[in-house]
Length: 152
Image 1: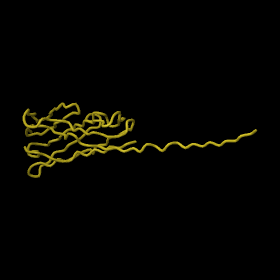
Image 2: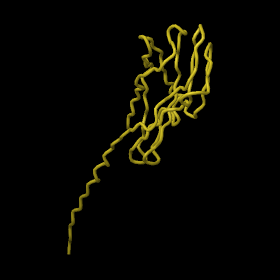
Image 3: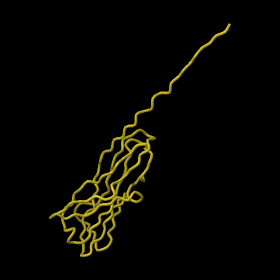
Image 4: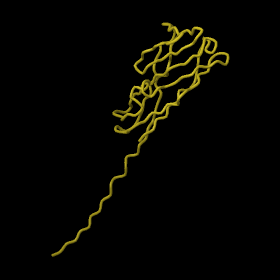
């Protein structure tokens, strides 16, 4: 007796990859004063704050803090973060300062990471560049920190 049986199978379709990013804390450089020559203020992804040049850090007002982004994705998803190289923050009387995010220093997960839990917290710091006291007078500065989260 001869029996012939044909079996075929199809791989399950891939799990759809959906990534959602929510801001849970904003980047804040705290209070500081700028001397004549300007300088930089950096907040790291570990919460540290440093000033260079003619910058004097003050321990009053709002506390400095890194930004926190919650990334919602399936565990095992590879995410790459790409910041815009420079952002302009607008201040009083038409003044502005520059904000830069360094991929190697300012992102807690590094520029590329694998999601291990959902949500995956990503801490992001940055550096403010203030040319001088005239270019960056006292007052609040506002702008948008733009990051692109790419899933692979």
